[in-house]
Image 1 (cartoon, rainbow, N blue to C red):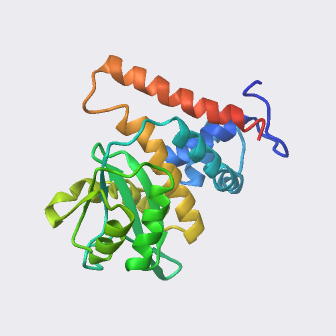
Image 2: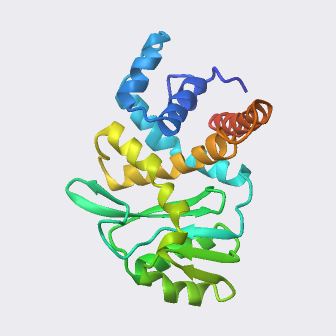
Image 3: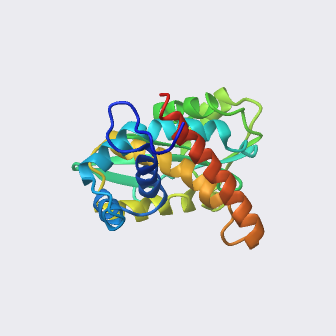
Length: 243
């Protein structure tokens, strides 16, 4: 299969679609930014088409990356704080949504989930998503959000739960790329669109940033890790032709 082939019912080759989806989720670009970047390369495509590609194919790329990425460490950091102002919130169409995020001890994002509440039911829903994809961890670190206490005790009886405000900077720092993306887009347009964007953003960041080690690894290791990340993305791109 050749990358210049187009997916079924699409006019542009899969290489262009893949590049647009990758740029949107890897960098703080808007659809119009990518439209202009492609136009510079004499590829004329509308920002509406780029948006439709991102919405349609984000789940596909996320699933392929999740199957190929490394296994998470057995210590998880779950974001959750007592105060509304300190919680990571996103305003969409005048409504506030809370971003529930989990990362491992290396900053590898496990999941991000947009919900309207920060209560016990929301915590159970988030933990159910996590435990459906990953083995039960040895340690879970949270802030002082009490909604986590009983769900973790019931759903992860063998897991050590550490609840302390100063222990969870790893999860809170993982919110920074979301704030930068939100600022570049001015705002997210819909809850489902934000969920799709942030879910794939985390997976792309795992393999192209966290695993590459931009600030910690030497040049040889960075290039090797980047080539591995690119091979995962290329595999997902090839699968678009048989999807």
